[in-house]
Image (cartoon, rainbow over all chains, first blue to last red; front, side):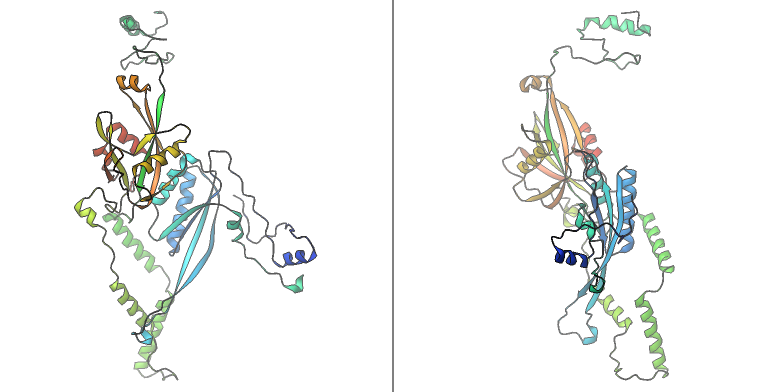
Length: 168
Length: 295
């Protein structure tokens, strides 16, 4: 597993045809594509993202730890494991008339916590077993999804910075 | 031939069994310990041609547990203890700090120390009020019962039975001259993969679009070999059938039996109830790939 700092400067590629487009590109910091390793052969899956999410941080983190340990014990190679920033959801409850002004509760904030474990080269024979174990040991209040890893998943971890005109 | 036997009793048996027409090296029917350098294969004395095996796909449709399992007494006690430890060692939350502040303010106001602030008309919502309102709302919430009506009637066809357990679909089919409980299975047509055969088998059993199922992976999870009796071997021209099982998860809907297919009955059973329905060898194979919910 490589230790990669988020936001580290990487060599940028220029996709512009002329000067103006190049200036436009420089405004937004370009992030180089990640080198996602292809599957080793026909019998294994590509890099898969297991994303656990929920409202309770302890449960989500413990489930992420559980999947990590389970994959290690099943001799699957864990490509990377990281946390995505927590998403705060504002729930605005519209309550009808009838209650006094002070009895109405209007707004709630719910935070969703997310953890991602990436598994590389999952053999097809063990895929159903891993999925079964994960589903059976899922705690209440936590959900998980498994998707193949794409460049979009990688790029959304970065904070896109606008470089101000004075620097250009 | 007698010279290279290490144990004398083998030589005697070899002589007595010479009446059998054997192919290749010497074979023994009984459970004997013979030397490691001898490799024996039991051959049928009647015919020597090797017939092919027929391939079948079986589908194991599972309804995953809807609710979590109930805790036993030790787990309950441990849970209580963990909660207590966490509560005692935790820091005050924002809400609790606000409650304490409000309480101090009320006390000070009663004792007349705090002046009436401008704009304070006594209608301010304190944190305690918020807590009371929230508790009132919680009392109005009714959780659904853990044991449904299907549990009470013990309706084995229902999908709502045993919400804390995994349910597996079993069908009753006529095989040869016996009707047996098995997982839905069917022969593989030429030119299709085993997984496609499994999907076709499942679609053939149910009415279309009633049951949404998701197959997991392209690799089968188990195999069961069934050798046909002699007369059927001659009739069909195959030695037996190998059934490869595929796992499928029930996403939504229910099994709706098609009236024209050879299925007389169906049931959704838990892993513990499998033994009472299936024959022993089949049950052992199936149990190896159906994971229990709690170990």
